[in-house]
Image (cartoon, rainbow, N blue to C red; front, side):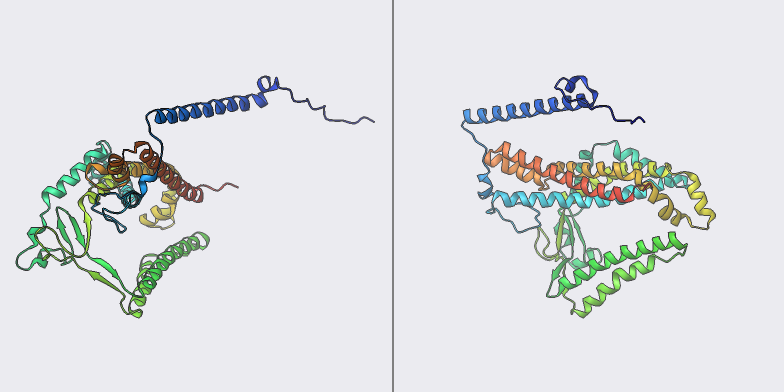
Length: 406
């Protein structure tokens, strides 16, 4: 009786790092990594030696010194005596604000334009095609300057609201459009207002939960639940009830056109630089998103929509329940790049005087302190962190909508 045994394993030898295909790729990767580490170490040491020879050293102590300059729009308390670190935080928050607004608005513009480009209405589809071709083929910096110039040259000054019955010149008596920006009512948060805010946020979560439940029920049983008016009820009714139960804790500070000859008082001012940067980034990137949406929809077989129509679904529900969920698997990856481009293109804010991180830390602070290396390193770290965070969040969502194989 014979037995079958495995052949004896060959002992590892150093020559196998080059001769054996199992180890050769690892050897080359290790050599490349070692050369990269050596190159980075050499450049870093060379930088430190040159700085020491010039009597300089890398230090971030300047962040604690008074900044000595004002910022026109801030989300946190700030004045000219605040340290440079505070100014940097103001710039970071301003960058995050305009990036978030532009990403949300660009997504709306892109989805609407991408869907309408496939419309059977010839006029609508051609108008959307003109929008896409014009806006994505002209640099975003030009659009920023165009929108800012239109706002400052066309809109009236604050002085135009003086005179008889100034509130009649305001839109709905609450909104004032001037060359300095748009003035809107500002909320005043009284005792108990946070309870109303929490209820509103819970209502938003409830809307998503209800719509998700309605979609799962439709897929599982074919029963179609209404989603429009129930979503509005879930969003509005609990918040309104809690608003009156808590004794109306949230009031509005209205813009006052009788303040002075140069500016309006009260309300919330949305500066012209923010509006110009916001809408320029949104309409520019929205044109690219529209093409991604159109490509994602066209990648879905026409038989999908025909089969859904044969079941009696209306065109709107076919798009929402059949086409877009499948197209998202194609749309999301390039959408991540568009969001990253919005965040990085926000650094063009300095062209219209919007105080983002590039204008504060990389502009005024750098010029005042002369700490170019430190400021540039901090800006690189900020943009790298934000880009990686956006990629991580969008990749999580991308994994949730991708095709699950058995």
